[in-house]
Image (cartoon, rainbow, N blue to C red):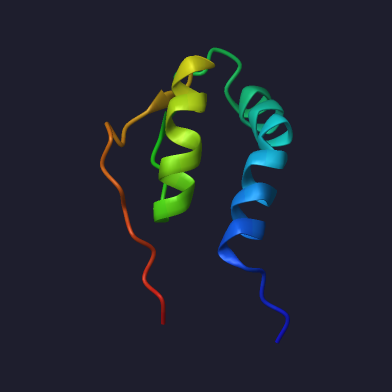
Length: 69
């Protein structure tokens, strides 16, 4: 299995933020659809950015951990 290190995963998430933002804006042009971020690093890396860009993020600083099965 070819897993990415945590730092590479974080860089990929941040590096693809523009594309995510564009996709979300297409799905909800007025940015009112509530979003819930799941996975600790996604919450930490993207919540503030999405809020600053006007998206309705419901986490309010709370991290939702993704179950690792």
